[in-house]
Length: 158
Image 1 (cartoon, rainbow, N blue to C red):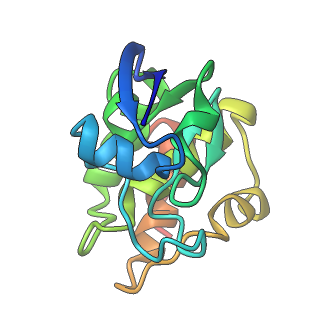
Image 2: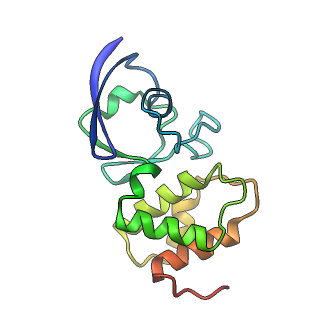
């Protein structure tokens, strides 16, 4: 066990846990933030995505202690962020989730993209979502939601 502090969603959390425990397990089990999911635990599905200092980061294999001194934002924290809230609203408006398991990671990826590039091309969107697996087949609705979030709800229903 080791003591360290993580800053998550704008709040400092003092932890005394195994420093090698993957971040997603600390977020879910110790902090009660269940938005980041444990899918493959191999960084191959991206259900565990969070923002670390604004960058899309997979959290299922990296030790939580590695993130001391950074700002971690989960899907829960994005609700308080203007871009994050806009994306979440667009996903709800488009009914862009079927089972919803992958949705938090996808929204985190889109937030990272829009924070660095407010006007991404379809290629930029595809690249940002390339690591995210969804087995439900809601891809067209997800893409519509992303385009609506970019345009402020003005995208056409293509």
